[in-house]
Length: 218
Image (cartoon, rainbow, N blue to C red; front, side, top):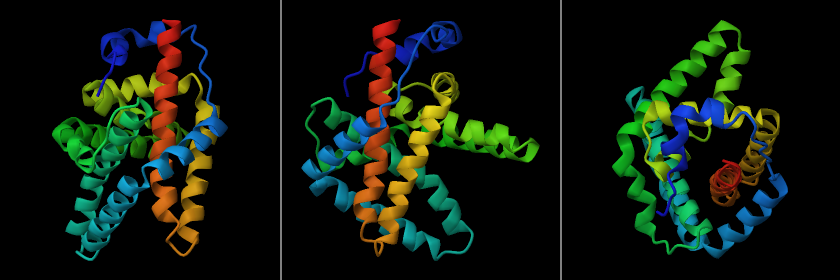
């Protein structure tokens, strides 16, 4: 995947680099483009979503251990959506095997998920609001790992600093994307085959757009 590695190069200085940046969330544009890209590549997204669902459903029947495995594979499968979505957004050719390329990054993805989850939980136990803040602030970390190949902590910190610059708008956008997923689930569950990948495509588009906005300003 083509990448200018701006986050890897600048992440240590992000606190200063982001000071004067103005970042904009364009929810309607992300939704419309995601809808278009999904249907253009539904032959890839729907089978992968079915596979994802079958694996999670099967593991859920295994007491305790099954739930642990679901939690472990979720970030890897989510990363697969982002790998494919980013390639499509950037005009690259995609095949089904691209969904599994994120497995090569299992270590930073797993560590990132663990650290982010622990810090978010601690934030919720403390005063609740810090946990809510970290939950949303860390949502770009997976995209950064698959796109920039940065480390776990580096991805979490860069994600937090970027999303903090547009926290309210990004939170509203994320809640909106959750409503789309819920609508798909309520549509007899079948709609989830559309709404679930739509969530990841929308967030991949948002990440790519914000990355371009940063590139134009630093």
